[in-house]
Each structure stands twice: as structure tokens, then as C-alpha cells.
Image 1 (cartoon, rainbow, N blue to C red):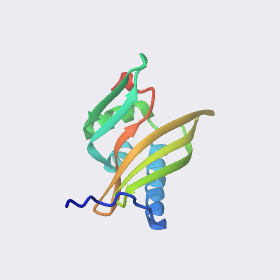
Image 2 (tube, helix red, strand yellow; image 1 turned 60 degrees about the horizontal axis):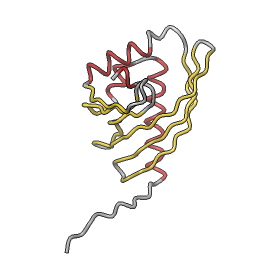
Image 3 (tube, rainbow, N blue to C red; image 1 turned 135 degrees about the vertical axis):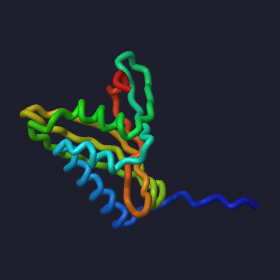
Image 4 (cartoon, rainbow, N blue to C red; image 1 turned 180 degrees about the vertical axis):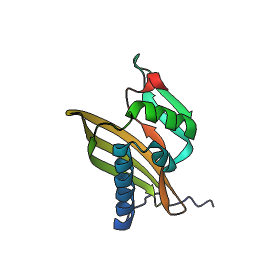
Length: 142
């Protein structure tokens, strides 16, 4: 008889607090446009999933160099302040895997944009890292 793993994991308060702390650090780095440190919080190759202007789903894998170059171009030089207000709904698949849906508003130069995206994070050596980013509308850049 083969025994399958129990995959009905229920996260602890510590699990949630650790994930919340990870996102707080990532958001702070994003606001400062510290793309190199943001890249330190990822697992490469990084998976990206989006859709393009024709409505087709797209995916790609980026290495660290491509992530840094693209995010630096997209995020700008940091001359203006950016604020994020986010509500995150994590689904823990295990103590080391989580899928997180984020509803967020980003305010920059007096303009506010609504964002919705999902990330897949894994924990390695006790630290969370993002491995997959999913957000609509970026497929033409992939």
C-alpha cells in the first residue's frame, strides 16, 4: 500500500506572521526601488505569468539579470514617493509553500492605481522567497 502525504495543511499564527513580515520588507524595498535587494528575495529562474494585449496568456522565466533590468525600467529611478496599501490572502499549501492573492493600491505622484496579483512563495532555509509572479497586462513585456 502506498501512503500519500497529508496535504491539508493549516497554517500557524507564526506562519502567517512570517509571510506578513516578508511582504512588509518587500513592499518597503519596492517603495525605495531597491531592485537589487528585491531580487535577493526571489528564487531564480523566476516564473512570470500574465496576458498580453491580444488577450492571450503568456509565461516566461527570468534570471536575476533580466529581473533587475526589467524592474529597474518599470519602477523608475525612485525620484517620486510610492506608497502601497495591500490586502493579502495567503493559502498555505504546506509550511514551506504559499500562494498569495494581493489586492493593492499604489499611489505615486498623486495618482492611485488599483493592482491585483498573485505570488507563489517557497521557504528555503527558514526564509520565504518568491518564485512565481502572476499579474494581468504585462504579457507584451515577457
